[in-house]
Length: 294
Image 1 (cartoon, rainbow, N blue to C red):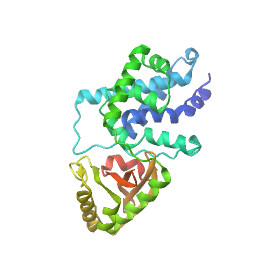
Image 2: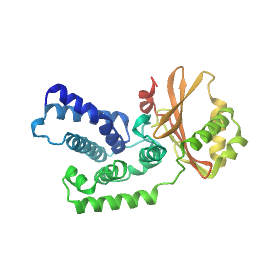
Image 3: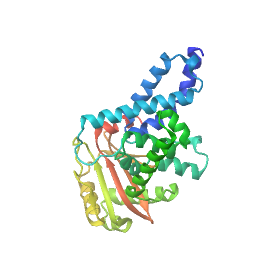
Image 4: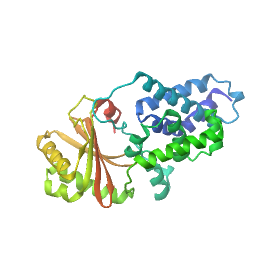
C-alpha cells in the first residue's frame, strides 16, 4: 500500500472514526485529537500486515478514546455547574437517505444520550457506542477490544440497562421538532411568558453549561414556571447586537447566538408529546469556538 493509497484509505474512514470518538468522549476537540493520533499510528504501521484497515482504524480510535476517558477519571476533573457535550454539527447529507436512518443517527448523538453515557465506565461506553450507534456484532466488538464475546455481551447488557433507566424519551420527528423549536425560540426572544408557558411541559428542565466561564444557572432548573421566567429575564437583558443562525447540531435543530459575530451560546430543545421537555444552553466559550465559521 503506497503512502498516497494509505492516506486515501484513512480519509475514507475519517467520518466513522470521528463519529466513534465523539460519541465516546462528547468533546469535539478531544475527538479530533483521537482521530489525529489514529492517523499517526496508521501512517507508521506496517500496513502490509493490516488485512482489514477499517477494523484496524476503529480499534485504534476506540482504544485511544478509552485511554482518554480513563485519564480523565484518574485526574478526577471537576466541572463548574452542569455539564453538556460540546455541540457537534451533524449535517448527515447522503449518509442517512431516509427519515428512519436519520432518526437513528440523530438519536445516537443526542445531548440527552451523551449526558447519560458520561456515567458509564469507559469499556461500557465503548461497547454501547459500537453496538448501538454503529451496529457492530458482538464478536467483532470482542475482537476490537480484546475481550471475550461473553464479556462484551455482559458489558452491553449492563450499559443498555443503565441507559434505559436514566435516559429520558423524546420525540425525534425532525419536522415537528423544528416547528416547535422555532416557536419556542421566538417566544423566548420576545420575552413572551404566556407564549412560553403554552409550549413548555409542566416538568420541563433547563440545563445551562458555562463551565464557570459565562453566565448560566449553576443548577438545573425545573418546572415550566421557573424555566419560563428565567428565559424572559434573559431576553430582557440581551444585547441588541446579538444575531442568530439556525444549524443542525447533535441530530436536531439548534440556534447559534452570536455577539459581534462570535458564538455566545447554542440553544437546543427536546420535545415530548408536543411540548418542550428540555432546554439545553451551551455557553462555555471553549465548547463554542469551533462554531465560529459556521
